[in-house]
Length: 431
Image (cartoon, rainbow, N blue to C red; front, side, top):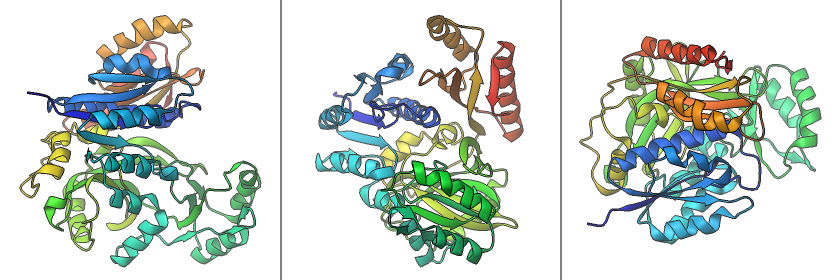
């Protein structure tokens, strides 16, 4: 019997940056998601097609894909993307919402009449605009930070508008792209001097075609929900897979996402509160896997922040935690009824980026062919193996534990970091 063919595409590692430097942090998360979702669909006996940027093509040997096409320097990945879409019955796309990239790639697959297992176009359209998300939450009477689109005055963001709203909110604010991804280009301000100093430099460097929002900063625990929506649920709430903690460093002016863990310590309590809130929201237009970022503000007040209409980094951890294959759930969301699905939390996972410097090995060939493969055998938690991009001396990787509880996960992360230090690697993050 012919196997089902699926094309799984991840933008950062799959050629989306073939004409530019690959952002290291985005690569670590993107490749980690790609490797994880490929492994899960492979367990369902799919034949898997994917693309890899020429600079990281040596990583093809650790992917469980059947057909891997190299995207060469300055090659237009879209041509190969369309060819693979034509060949495969199913398509799963992991890409940023920025500049409508995710929407346009999904639209291509839809125009070829393929079965799209990633989030559908209506879900992507909602999640791509932070103002649209804000209005969606307000319409559904859900707590969400006050949010404003920053107008332009001639060619510059209206500084007077920003100061006026900052004074009106009377507290810290964040400024971020209207269609940005995660913690990318999110800026935090506590006073007017910080805002003024930042914009003196910002005006010289930012893309004048990009829209930004100003948002009230909510102090609390950064968290997220991983969900699957389905047309088969007939308007019922999406299935919650896990509730996750997010490790976001936002108070250094520019924020940075480092990972997180799943599930939350107070998972059952939060799940109960979320279930009450979720009943107020009509998610019927969102299909497939998606995420929602929220803030847990003491005492147990939940502020919904964003909808992420795609596979999120939390997937790297949650697949180690629940009782079912996430890929099978995603597939069933398109083909079967999910109402009888029971999600059980069996384990705990801490997933995080690890950055370190290597000075012991000047020979990169020896490092990649001998040292790092040996390190990955010793530390199977490496989802994205250590790699140095853009001629940097710093190596970055992504790990995900699979343990019985949060304490065990923290101990295992510390053991991994100590193993790196024993090899005279200088660990930069996590500190």
